Image (tube, chains in turn brown, yellow):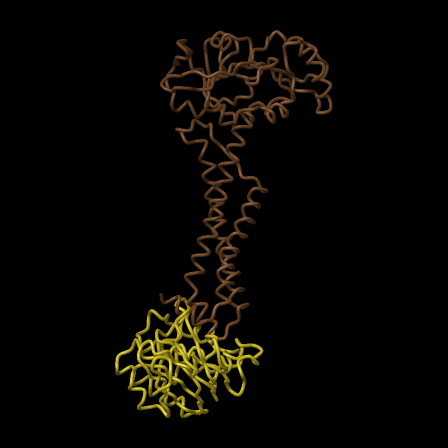
Length: 317
Length: 207
């Protein structure tokens, strides 16, 4: 995602003051010289982020960057771009084929194909910042700065802020955390995931409840044979755990496989990706087990309070 | 062996049994007869501890139901059940069905019982791989596995043809001759041939 792209190569981001979206930010890249002269700076680069129709694709991310940032893009084939040249991300390279590309009525030669491991970038086009500057009529969208050590980030931030009154200096982490669009996307994703998760849990509970309800006759027979409520509940508990763990393992493997192929689905152009952290996996496991147990044990507990003959007859009806 | 004292029972507003009192002695084969809806299955369920009556007292093997500490163990040790539709557990084979019902010390009875009932060859078969008559014999073996003092059977031949019904009744007769009390609820008058005592129910009352 865009957040990964910003956080990958730098500690500090400089944007235009008072502009909340990098798409509208314009920072004078002449600042690069002054920045490089600061003692705590390890490296720095400027970037223009824009979007434009490319070939037959209606909208594609365009990244114009200073030459020193090209090494971030690992070439699969070809060369880094010179003037009026572009390199294509692996995901878009299959859809925008040909030696030349038309971007916003300007012709660019395709000099290579890159991969960066970030789906957002791999679905886009990278060019020299000078060309991008001409396309989007701005000096740079932002400047990224890396500090010599993590301890010097705060000092460096203060020094950078003093360079120009028209800029805003933030750590990339802070920027990503605060960026409204990231927040909206993240919160929307979380909400959708949460709703899907709750629906899934309700499904687990209902399925288990239906399974148990359909076995009332069996419980009645067992009670008639002298089996205790404890015996029935214990067996049901073990069955539920086994069933839930098997289903969970299957779902996890399926999800991981899906996430693995997600970036290579052409239609998504690499913009959609995801991960499953250990915490999330554990949370899902525990919640699923609890809901499965509630779904299974509640009706069986009610059944255990019912006369066996009624359970047997309910099973007949 | 079995004593019922003024048993009454209702399902909601509908009263199905009215002040039923009766005695059954050890080793008797008792035929509980009556038309459909006469209350015989309800009475059998109450006698056999599977249903709690609204009123009255049930005494089994000299103990009132209220005084029995562990009803599950009591059922397992002293009572055997045979139902109309055999009610074997479908996902267990014949041996496992009997094993499920058997007390630990009675598991040794399983093979001789199956052999005695002529179904030893079906040991590993599942209920859906057996005929109706074979299933009912397995159900009878399950009822007998713990050497119970009483066997209750509710329409045990309801799903069988007359030949198989005859075989099943003869088996019950054999069991009763070995001093086990047998109570059969059925609308099939064929049972009367084998019964020591017939109790007829009409509209929830003994006629």
